[in-house]
Length: 137
Image 1 (cartoon, rainbow, N blue to C red):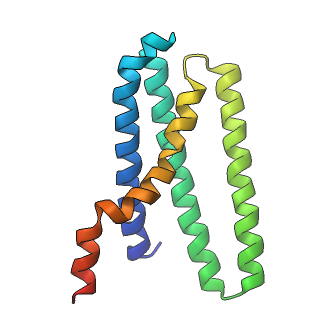
Image 2 (cartoon, rainbow, N blue to C red):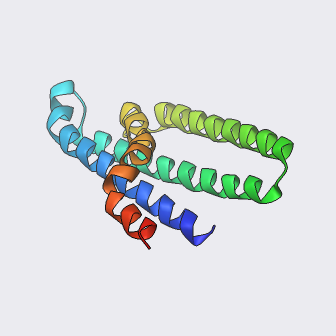
């Protein structure tokens, strides 16, 4: 990955982590009210964060690969194929969690993974000052 992409991935990861920390704080208090154990919710959020980071890195690597190719047909086919692979792997993981690991709250995994969206939306907000520094030079 290029340095610029690594920086963007790191910035988005901050938003993802922030999202998961907020959910962890809420889950700590709400889990017993909803009949879940705190540990299952926190483990689920942790696994969701790991999934989100894995997806983010995979998307960054694939995006750079297809941009380097310069071939629109290859780019379209490759991004669609890898998007489907990511979704399939995630669904398999969720099925395994539901089936084999009752100690992990599957809803918390999904909510933790949604931190990827939060990271994307928060990146321009959290790092606005960084952007103005680079554009002013």
